[in-house]
Image (cartoon, rainbow, N blue to C red; front, side):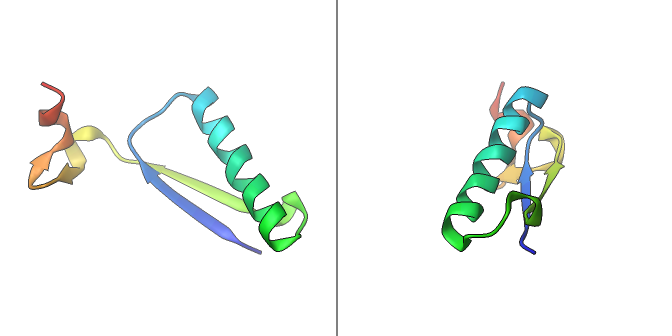
Length: 62
């Protein structure tokens, strides 16, 4: 049973639904497994708890 973990900043439920569907479809197609065998975990990290290039992403938005 594949388990996919996505770490990202907060997104809308609509965007997360689409992401989960696309990830699941990719595993179904690639591995020829049923969709209910795929688990997707979304871990949302606030912009003030994530940094890129030594700078918080919250600060990059300013």
